[in-house]
Image 1: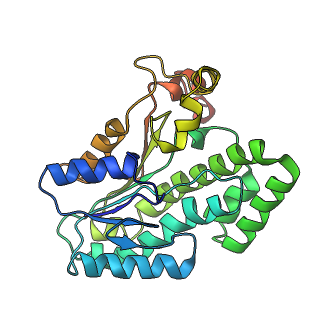
Image 2: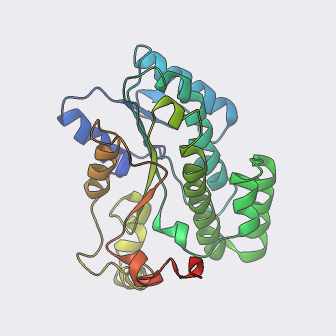
Length: 268
């Protein structure tokens, strides 16, 4: 199992929680991160992604049974584009030939509930339609320059998550994945108590704001282990037919926002 936390932070994010749960179950896990990991890799660069994939395979003695790709940042800069979309997509493309040799090699990525929120369509297209990192970075920089850091942070982040969910749907039935028997899915967390949300959750106004923006009626904000458990199932032998999906772990936020009929536009 190759696990890609991707933040460089050793507090319990989703990637670290997944790694710890897998190791507790007796699995051998190779962690990939910017620092303090089994494999040190900078997923913000093309060469870093290739080198990281090669080093991961080497650290796993040439055999990888599954990948959980959790890399993500929320900077209001082009860095978010390079890590959240290209970092995961290109890393996985590099891992695909090795995964194809395994008996049952599933892959799961982190998307977000934010994939359903406001995004920039030109930025999304530059990533998952045109596959043009330079163009996507230029658009992200323009958003940052014109909108300011607070608006840009949310808009760029949501766009990268929309793009990665579209990438999963598009790629999942291709020969490289489905043809090799590789289920390819994403999970879409709502508000999770991890380092990325720490600054918001430590003050009352921040908690109230998140509760309005991401309504999670049943049990409120979630712990990272909640997402990790689903990722582990999606990469287990039990998952033979779930593929191409973004499964939202959001306490009902998707339903609260979109309602009970998301099929209406398809009705005649």
